[in-house]
Length: 171
Image 1: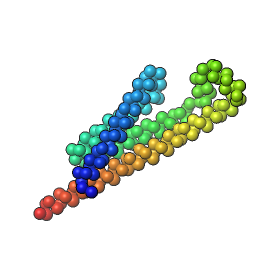
Image 2: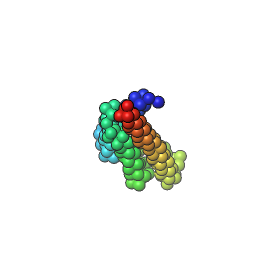
Image 3: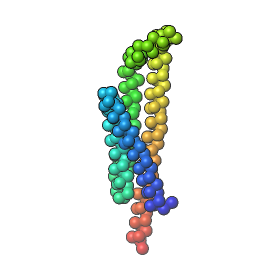
Image 4: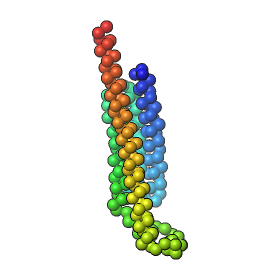
């Protein structure tokens, strides 16, 4: 594959992913500000920073600058760390009883008629574990995979570019 074609492919992936993460981060931040959720505000800011960092890496990649690899891979690691910390916060600190108390009183009343409150809390705790452990697993796979892709693909670009320069010098 030709170097410029590969570079354009990586840049396209970075553009789509970077803008997606930045926009979702902004929406998360906006919603969290409306309901003043501190953890949501932090995850929104981290996602926006990650998206901007990826777009910055894309610009550097298009300029053929060496630090593009660190920016692109680093943006994925930043988002991965933020999501893992956010999920760990919910797994360790958010109590099912607190979640149940956030439900409107009439919903709590209806739920208590269907299920024992302790069983309901156990169900909520299980749902929280499944949700956030799944989120961690998906994030590790996606962001970790994209970090690995950016690292390996840009390394190949650098090697191919160095090989071309070496051939030009020999001529």
